[in-house]
Length: 560
Image (cartoon, rainbow, N blue to C red):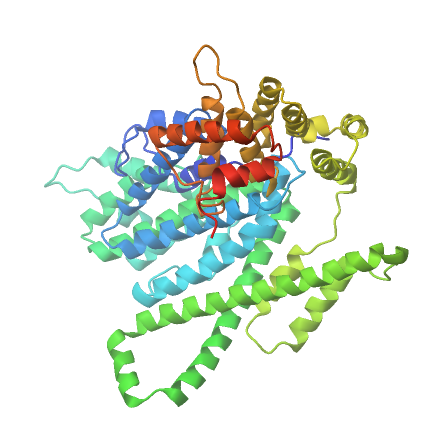
């Protein structure tokens, strides 16, 4: 069934992270310090997911609150950074994907695409990287024993696994650990019973996962009673938060997707982790052989002074940099093969004996067999993500969308395109496309008010859909806003210019857009708007190419 194509929004992702970690204060407990109270935070997260109102301000506020909450849990930044930094990296790879890939799938299926093609590889790298960081500085021997404890769900959830591990580490039964009765301090026996009941319910996964502040309250009571020293207590909290996050993610996967799909996801991530760790061991072996043969006695002395932990971090970062370079090289070669394939196909109706998919897989298979470098993880990721296109029902929708961009370039007949647009159902899949095209058609006719109405409509649904075309749309929208004629001495177009620009800043979290899209206060932005409005007026009669106008109005200062 055809539906609006879109990736999940940044607001969706941040709301999910809040829900997965449970960093939302309950009505009773406020161990996690946030300036937004629990009740209003729930509501504001809903607005954030829909990206209503001042989405840039709201997102920054909630992102900062989350970071403060995580860092407020630990005295040692190594714990908080190891929890917070992977989530930042997740956002970065997500932003790169939605600003590159043009989706034709509705939100749930687009999320599945993100999981299989982006998040699995990034999650594997993050798990590996921060496991190594943890082991370098925070005693790797003090962690749950099972290698994949955070991926179990049906038999024992990650949260139940960590709770049991804490009891085992303290050499106490559940009842002994939570028996905080002390006649001297008048501890409430009812509270002990409540704590035991809560822990049993959480471990069984038969009830809704509690806010993390509730988990902290129950365990902090026992930590204090048993005089557990601070760093050991922080390690327990560290793993409880990871376990809460993992349990929530697994719960959502099992609820939203088919069992076979979930099984495939978990199997892949386990295989990826095994391959990545093997590659790293091979890499370290090569580095060690070369290092020992070249190091002078003075350099060995310096290395001892620096410490093994920092040397390990250096090796991990160096290894991951090498992995990234291998990934870029393989992608470059595969793209060359694709370009040659397309060129041959267009030349004299040349028919290939094999599909592009099979050619790519053959190349990757040879590379996997012949390569002696530690790159098996990267090759496997390519093999898994380069799959045949299996959504044949969407071919006409995709084709019509591509022709739509040709319409804006004047390379395809508008009426023919429009007829096909409604015939294939793109008014449901890409409702924004006809508004964008009509907006540009009105702009070319200098009917600027009509153009603005169309661009306003397009903005409602184009976000998180159009991949690399989103920057072009934003700039077309700003140019149409600049084109508005002033009325009765009042400057027109300001609100729309500001909206489009703020969206560009919002999507530019990791410098994905040009330098122009750096955050500015309203006064600075209004000055830019007025200056560009005058500049547009001076050149609009001779230049109507919005690409050239964008370069002249927005980017010329930053071009080198």
